[in-house]
Structures are given as C-alpha cells and as structure tokens.
Image (cartoon, rainbow, N blue to C red; front, side, top):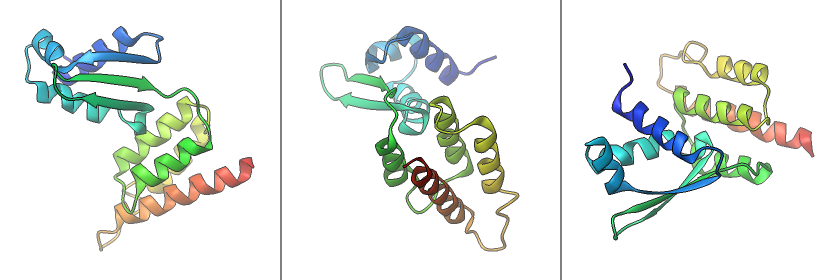
Length: 153
C-alpha cells in the first residue's frame, strides 16, 4: 500500500502530465489529501528537487503557491549547477543515486555508466573505519561529472 507521500507525488505527476510546469496551492493540496501543509512541503523538497530534474519556486502568502518546473533543456551549465548546489563537500549514497537517475533520464549518462558510478560510490565500496564515506562519494561524483564534461567538449 503506497504511503501518503507516494500518493501526493503521483497526483502531482499525473496533474503535471507532459507539461513542463505547474502551479499548485500548498493549502489546497493539504486540504485535498487531508494532511498538514508540511507534508506537501516534504514531498516537494524530497521528490521534486534539482537532483530529480525539477526546480521548485515558492510564493508565500495568498495560500502559499508553488510553481514546479521540469528541466528539459539539459546542457553543461545544468551539470555545473548540480556540482555547485547539490554535491558540495559531502553527499549521501541515496542523493547521488537520484542525481545519476536524473542524468540517465536526460541521456547524459547511459544506464550502464550510471550503474558503474553507483557501484563505485556504494557504501560497501567506500567502507572505512573513519566516517569519510559522504566526502569520498562527493569527490568521486564531482570528478566523474567534470571529466565527462571535458570529454564532451
């Protein structure tokens, strides 16, 4: 049985359809799903973020409207934004896999390439007595992406 977050995500995706953007009312969605507005915020921040190919623009007041934009125009500046905004000094395995999935969906990486990078960044591959997994993972992902960008030029 799907949880409320899955249901809200699927509703937003089906409402969005093939459109590249949609405006939503946080309060109306919360009323529709009989949940707190913070549940809507949770879904938006975890399921509709740059790692998954979406930009969320919030407007406070007047019911709290949210505009979701699906990123379709994929270019090198998008990769640099991911590196600057999402990887930073550390990244979890889960978040790095979301980035890889997004890059595959945008045909920047093949599924095989993404699997290889994911294996190299897996908790098992980065096992260490000192908790440096997320830092090492961030360095691996940054270097892979930067070197792939160099290959394309």
